[in-house]
Figure 1 (cartoon, helix red, strand yellow):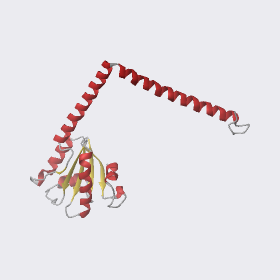
Figure 2 (spheres, helix red, strand yellow):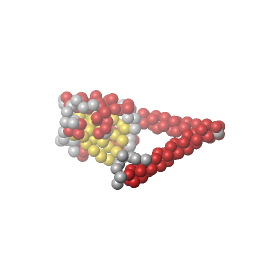
Figure 3 (cartoon, one colour):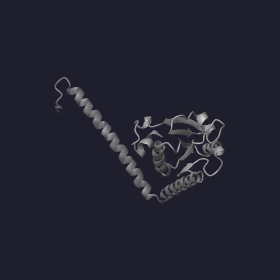
Figure 4 (tube, helix red, strand yellow):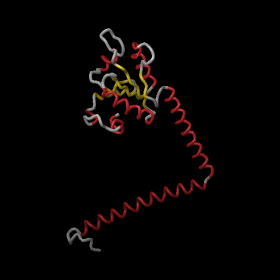
Length: 197
């Protein structure tokens, strides 16, 4: 069989073709074994029942986890310290980081228009990413006497508005300051922010 490689490369071409053929046969054989395994499973009622019970247990466990997350405030984009003394923002932050493995905290100032862009994107992400809790902290009332979120702002090094802090296992692991990581523009997509987070 002439593979068109010329006389000197004919042996190399033939060997390459044999290797490709062997690899393809091995893959076909593996797929056929998997099909045979599923066919045998369909014939065994006890195995099907075991598989069904395992899957049902997994689904129940996932639903319990989802309910636990919802009880901890996951699935919504809420403000820490809203509705009570603004000095409690720090306490609320630490409580939220204890309850949730993953926490996304948006530090904002209502007078900064660019913060509204993050608000819109984070409000969309919160219900889609149940495993992460999304919160916001108003830094408008920070002062030198420790009012508002001053302790958090100082401790986490919040300087630029808007800033998002990603907390994982009770540790601040990343800061997104402004829109630089999102292309340096304010018309980024929600999926771009989701990717960065």
